[in-house]
Figure 1 (tube, one colour):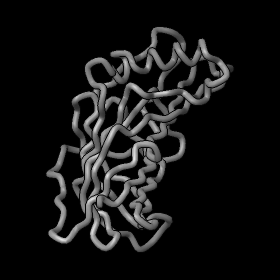
Figure 2: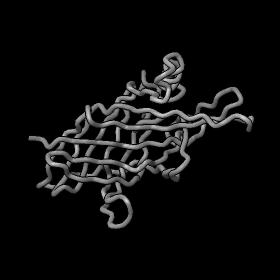
Figure 3: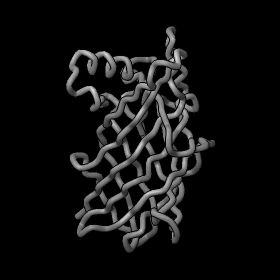
Figure 4: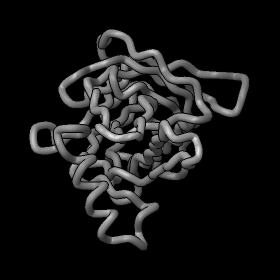
Length: 209
């Protein structure tokens, strides 16, 4: 969902495979509608320089969720699809530099990166959900990430829980390779944009009446 310049310093890059058949809801499952005001995707990206005396430069920000539907049975996630609005990308780290913020966001939305005029949305559709009993996360989620018209299946860990009438998904920070989705831009100067992009999903969905 959602994707940007580059980066990835902590998490191992996810292997992106061929798209898989989407998972389906069981007969007794409940439907949850994603609350777009309370949900978002965060991103982090970095570049470095051939001149080793120059420090690495990083940016981070958010992308809004446009809509989404999830299903769960007894509080256990089963299926779902989430759509992000790529035109809403913002660079939060440049909040105090309006000119630089505008330039960076404009470039990231251009055909060099997100190409929002042609691909205003990105989608993630769940293909498999696996409960986890060890570690910091209780669920492994696989799904088809369709970004810039390129669908790839990725897998990441998350904590999934019920909180009253809400179904909440809070993912780990996970890293994708931008070139897996056709983002091959390379600057013509002394900088190098990293291929790795760090993403994190924070999804809150309301039980459908």
